[in-house]
Length: 230
Image 1: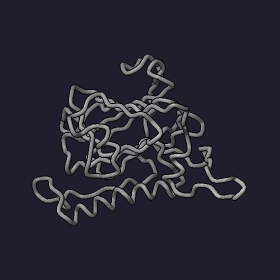
Image 2: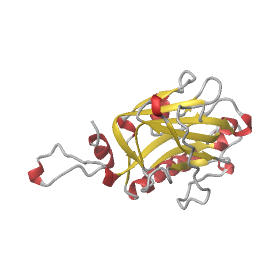
Image 3: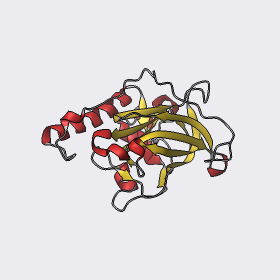
């Protein structure tokens, strides 16, 4: 039985040979003292935005803006607002004992194809998570372990999938709880620079505020994500 929930369901571990290519950057791109130089900052921004565009081209849509987000702890100035900014230079920092938690609560049941995390080991070092466990359910009372993954010095977008949870490998839930079990170098607190909750575009009931007789609907990813669930 998991100590994070009342469920006895065992976690589904993601295979390390997942075919989706993960982005990375190299430590040599940064100046001494873990500060960005102009070229490295531009490269980091490009890595961040290119990764999102690749996922959108796969027919995925980020539905994180439709949820209420919570964290177990945070250091002042490094909370949910910073986590939710679309920037590789801001981040959430926990401020307490492990394990640390992030909760993502939707008002309606959603379909999730993957969770995507943006890490930067070159800058965050011992603050970088090394093991993550994901639980999901309709509420805190029925959370089940649905996936877990270990990381080794990750930089760029990293992905957690839900293979084996259902026959279609999609997660359907109201609540997602992400547990940060350990960090690199036995670090205490965690840094997470971004989290995206990606859903297949085909699974969402898209609707338009434009008269349907015109045959015109929303075409941008941003407008589609904001019109999907109310």
